[in-house]
Image 1: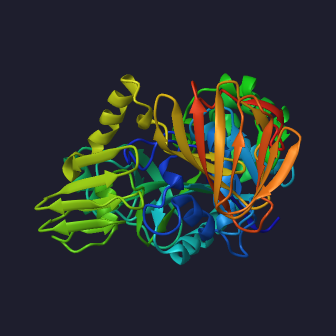
Image 2 (image 1 turned 180 degrees about the horizontal axis):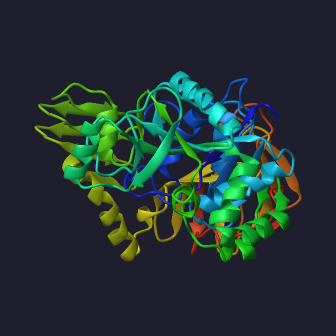
Length: 472
């Protein structure tokens, strides 16, 4: 295998970009910097003849988001591996390496987070090519970005001399320095921001795990050995995976290895860690307000306004250094200098049991997605979107009846023994307890408005009889 195998890590969940990024829909899947998500941008960076189809590692709750976003950009994954629970990067990377080793021990792996902003993909690919000789020599390669500011929120890679274009030996890691040390390192020219991107052969990184973190090897191997196929995914076995230590690959392997090489990336890079960073990345002129969606800014300076819901307008008047993000179920207003504290706010919301802290208003399913539009004691209104050719399970409800009104496309509706096609502006009633199924037989997304009436509307009030996605 001469091509490079991209390993895309898409299982993490952050809170600092709340409410757009939440536990159920983290920032890698959000459209923060353009019409495509960060995950989709990562996929495009390695969609050339030099790379194989990517291996994606993700969590169970994101598997259908991954599939949908792959489809949106006409990209197929070589494999989508589902981690039973989040255990940081070291176990995930080892699982991918062992999976590849079964077919090609000498395959070159490029490990990439899926939530970074890299503006010049051609420069990134040039850096990858520059690192290949070091990989061929048996080294573990890591990539670093030239620091622009004395950033205290990033880790740094220390070199013995200012980097050139060729791989350089790594002298050491510096974890999130204070401001004085960060300024000293920036002035020296010998330090790069740690991008968290790596390249090595499958056999070399597995050998490194065996040398420096052998405790992970047996359980990760068992999780892969007893993995089960599920539709287009591979589910790692939960029991051996649950016993793993949650640890990053830096701590587990990289900081202990003596065969590391650093390749500098000369383009722009950011991890988009806070709303202040998102604001900086927007490349706006000083004193100008940045607007996304339906917004109006009057007399504002250094302001980020984002309206994430159609028909919802944000108006800012005389604001300074403010971020305001409005969604259908939550609004954030913060000073940009306090952007790091958004995480603390989310933790308090979680402690109070506020569902908006972790749950995204749009819920993704293998057949499409739905979102709640209105809710009362005895009713709930949802918008449901079903992808072409997809179908919900044959199911019934104990506590609610439903009315379906098709507003786009055509629905194939089963109610007990009756099967009919429902077109736009037509509706159908689903009595409480009736076995029913909703399908989209057409070539375009089918959209309907669902009005639920009854005493309980939870997703656990579903009795499934048949399901093409093998859900319980």
